[in-house]
Picture 1 (tube, helix red, strand yellow):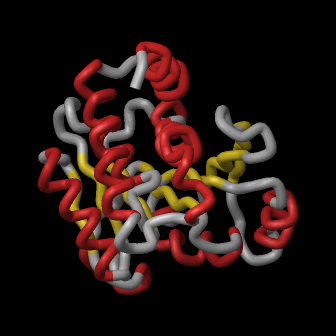
Picture 2 (tube, rainbow, N blue to C red):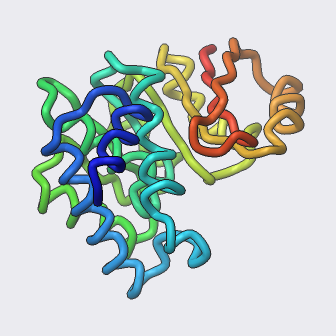
Length: 206
């Protein structure tokens, strides 16, 4: 990775240390190694993991820069949960809970957490089985997990307790939001993605 990559990360996520940048670079290498053995993401995205996944995840830090506790639903290959854990690792009293029911993916997440000493915990459970074992986070995240009406249902235990939802959504997000209004009441603020101009990150509060 180059100086330009470090500067781009700081533009996307806000100021980060060189050590944080180097952890993210090492994480990308580890991700690529595991992705050759298990399905961590769509094969078509593996040629651009840095931008498509890491930077896309890292932009969440600008949207909730002071939040210490994060919960990532359906973490998969670690986006955005592991990226947030790496970005927050140098801050005191931070923690990220990652929920992933697939055992192989959960093992990958745990391996990264252990290797980098991240302030994070993996819950190898179905999302509906998690609320009893996770306190109220400041932010709930999810990326490419489910259509928005279903996603709001999964996140509802934490949103109703006061957490903010930050959910990556693509070009069809307006239809999902319209459908969601028939089932849920919420306050919504839309953030345009800094990576993909056709995507947004809706901020939900109930």
